[in-house]
Image 1 (cartoon, one colour):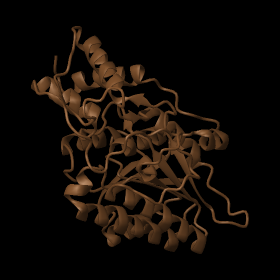
Image 2 (cartoon, helix red, strand yellow):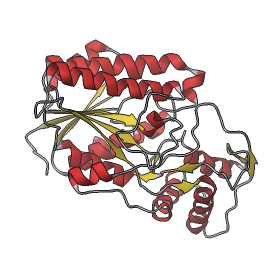
Image 3 (tube, one colour):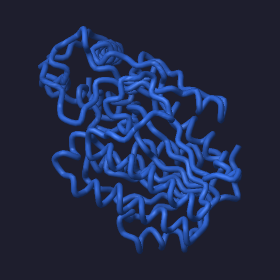
Length: 339
């Protein structure tokens, strides 16, 4: 599947998805250049732990740098001449975009612009970039399909991701760069992001604190999320890396959903997490719960259609939350040495 003579540049390589993608490519004998600024949006030690694992591979080269620094981005392209670029560096988080909008403009817009410019001046075989299920906003038609109208984002984060898709399309049109955008749906798993709900709930449990649930306590009209396990995300990603879109008289740009196509009620997800943690610890686990109104920028449901992905590469995510959360809680308790 992988061409070992090619160089892969992964931005955000110390991040959650970036780490697992880089590891998968390195295990296949590929040469991987990792670019990451190691910012402190969440625990830097976790990013460093991921990075240390990647440093065990001879074919891995790490460059500390920020994609919003044009000189750093162009330096990576000029030095390593990547064939395939995967842009996973971004400022993540819906709620944080309301508190600190500046960093979203800096990273998600200026940073992505720098990546596009680098691909323009140093042509690549394929540019793959992270979009997000948040572009669907409050769409009521489910499942969400890639052809849906997505011009009403409800958070700045979502607006930057929609902007990425427009920018990528334009550069693909003007400079014939083969570009693929990936709309990820609520990614979770071991070594994940501490700012994600499942991770935070687990931290709160061990701190003896209640978890905050933003659904008004309305179990009948609970929030739905298409939780997607990290291994499924990476499998979809690596399959798409080797099939860049063709111009065929048009624009070589396309987008894909990568989601589990099986949305779960938030309360069911929490109950499954309690059971998984209980199995890891060998005792009953019940979170203390506080219910609050839904937060600005949050959406009531996410639900991915994966038909386009399956048609393109013969794959659709299938890991159950029971299996995925068990792997997470087993890792969490071992990593943080809690019991």
